[in-house]
Length: 104
Image (cartoon, rainbow, N blue to C red):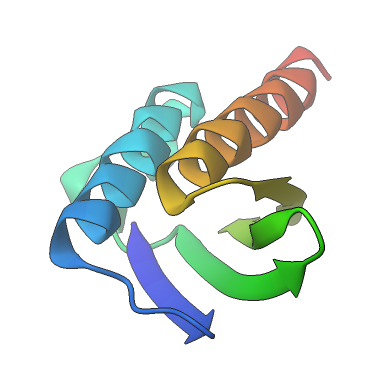
């Protein structure tokens, strides 16, 4: 998978980035066989956008991810208290959408 990041209002630390990539790479087991081979490892593209917004209850992180699976882009938007929580929520939403695609 190829990852593209767009971060506003905060810094994406290396540990947070590796955790996010680790979570999203788990989605690769939901891909069909032809997209998991070594020849097509760069077929799937992930665009991640992270924003830090001020809220009256504190800082709120908003995460958006679009997984460009061939012929079926999958999109998720979440908000959480920190980047790791957003990573977990993005993984859960994208996993459920990918599972729906596999059932079709």
